[in-house]
Image (cartoon, rainbow, N blue to C red; front, side, top):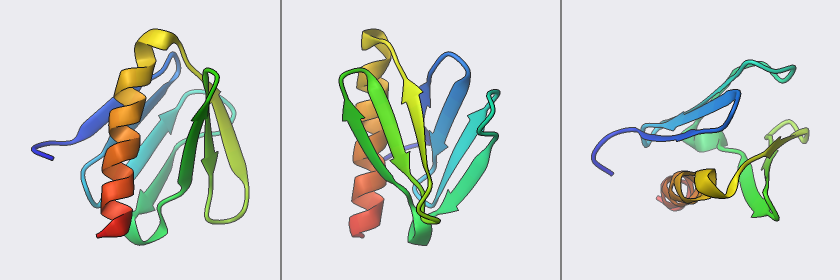
Length: 84
């Protein structure tokens, strides 16, 4: 990864620099930061991104078909960092 990987949804921005995943959310979930050692699980299913947080809570974010490629790239970067 050359630079930060970003994925933007309507009211949410995800940024991953290889070490820290940042989630900026204008909605009720608020913003969050996760170090590589504590990265949440992420899954895509039928237009919904689910994030399983380390504290056993989860967040659900709907997204459009146009936003999916950026989310998939983000998830691949997070998975690669988790495996490192």
